[in-house]
Image (cartoon, rainbow, N blue to C red; front, top):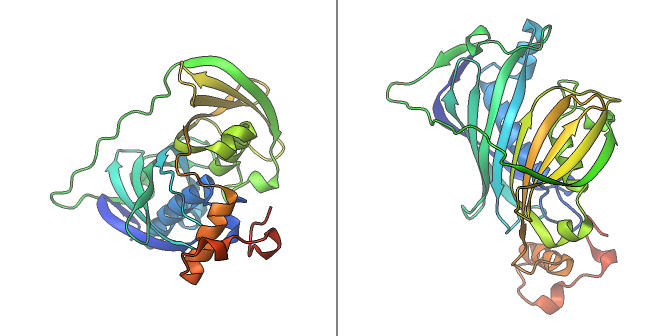
Length: 290
């Protein structure tokens, strides 16, 4: 029987591949987010409420909000990570999934919450979860009351860019996937920020669907007076807003450079701590060479 149950932890293990990393061998933020979403999808499949279960009935799951925090000590190529997800709160139309992404030594690299809502395909409107499955709340189980997502005050306009959505931005629901919005938002920032800082927290609220061939106008504002907090609003040229993203950057303090990351990768696979042996020439890089 199709059901969703409050509580309980679902775990999946992932090994970081070359598709998951940036040019410095670090796990991409959107790859960490992909592990979270994949774990939720696996949990739903186990309970017969996955996308392929409910689409023939005329419904899809839509993610309305995601918030997450990330550490500076970023996992590297070929590390194994454990994703833990659980249904932490249930309302009539919303399922809140809390997640944690752990390294093999138990260190938490990322954590956060996402909200999944069932939507009727024909109308695009939310429907009660009980429309698609049974709600189960075990005796003694209590949900976590999640605070409302807030974005703070919008400051000065920093930059404005346009993106034409392509087939590569689509997800299996045949609309622009949430990771595509985030990729566009982050890639718009200047290289000096991307190279010298890291995204320490992220929050995104989805407002409407967009599709292949749509033009997205991305406007980035300072979040109040904080020089490292930004609000990105993505809209159609008509002004209809597609999503709002809050991105907080933090300065890198670990001194991670391309060479030190390459050295860390080689040490991880050779067991060597001799730094003189692990500085690789670019032609020797196994993956992700610049």
